[in-house]
Amino acid sequence: MTASLSDLLTAQKNGVVAINNVAQTNQKSLGTQTSSTVTSSTVIITGSGYLVNFSVVVAGSSVGTIYNASTTGGAAASNALCVIPDATGIYKAGQAYSTGLVVVPGTGQSVNITYSPG
Image (tube, rainbow, N blue to C red):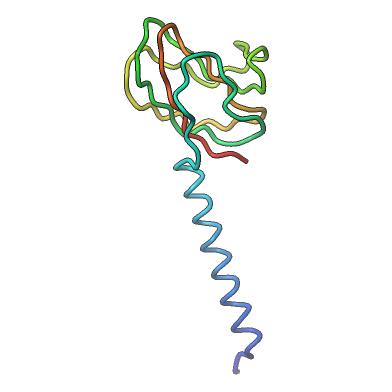
């Protein structure tokens, strides 16, 4: 049995689509965006996506929090994604968000957020 040109092209197309899907999934887990340095309550993005990690550049004197919210007023304990430690370093988060990302740094903290929208 011999495959037609159409069959061969369809197989090639399916391979390209599969490779593209793997690349997009990999990119999402690595993060596609990094915020500017955040020093006060800030909306990073609205909508859904994936919080990859965050970097504490200046430790400050108290912990902060990252929320699944679309406004700073909407940040509440019930939608907290993770605590931002009061120690410098890069911290893996690995959290999906559905509403947006709001960062409320602790006193004196400076942080950067790496995420993938959508």
